Image (cartoon, rainbow, N blue to C red; front, side, top):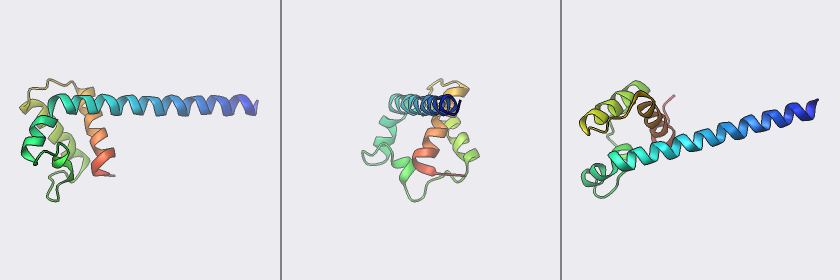
Length: 99
């Protein structure tokens, strides 16, 4: 019985990891399509410059979500709520590390 439980737990962990990787890939694709060109122009060729600059605007998860929503609207990306959440989560995990 313990072997079955351990196997089931391992499968769930693998599925969770695969889902996170898929979300990260999806978020990266959304950012590349809708954000990277402008960010690179604004930050000396560095598409991640908005996230790594010393005077960045994002100071909380709510501000991050607000910024993603603002630029989604400004860029006319037309992301849905799930895509906005995925991008905000990805940016937090990759760059901001906000609690």
